[in-house]
Length: 361
Image (cartoon, rainbow, N blue to C red):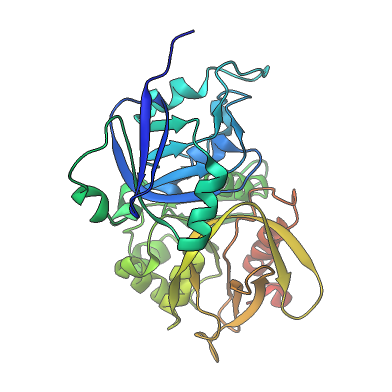
């Protein structure tokens, strides 16, 4: 057995954790966040919404079922990976290779043997902070202290449009604006008879409307939503012109386009066990989430109706825009957390495109 090399995880507050290196060689700096999923590490590693971040897995054993490329949600965009115990010898009939090989292939440094429980408690108490994975503790921490997650949506968005046919009979034509879209959003639409044209994040509203789509899907994505002023301006032009369904970053961008506000959360919501409840009833859903910002409840008064909230902290999880044929959610209905508690939202989007007045936002 090849011995692993010592590595360090240095936090912005000066705390140093010692562990062992795996994955790619080299140092990295990023915003340190944690995700609570007990499975789905491949989906986490390939979720573009983690761009610019170093991710901690709170579940202690990671890598036990290897790497299955069919389960990827996109390209690896995170900057570093932190786990308690890395499984060197995966066992799964679908496994193609191990996690160490994936991180090396994608250029992502990893560190294992870290007390992820203590690390997570620190982030819950102090909030997310910058961190560095390195082989030696540097004297100068300027790069660590000055780091910020910026420009990540253009970095992860597709660079050119492409079209994916519907599975079976084509029912609708949907334009998906890619801010860092997870592939299962695309699969969920195609499985329901949608031909999906995926366009870059800098596509104009005029170009989208010229394609005469039956509906527009606004995807998830990374970073501070307020930074994406061009995207916000295009959504403002699209609202009311065509049915719109927004997920995660798409939810936040729509709120900003409609005059709402967003705020950075202390440590965000990341994992497959986030409870969401209806504001007008007792129904609750288990959802998958990955975001560090939230729409400010009440900032859309008179424009949008909050219809879903987080059952843990009361933050906004869903907004309907009456008369605009538009609704958005903060979580991922395509991610099967419940396992399929909220998949009905895609059907609601289809009903809206089909002219069902009961489905209008």
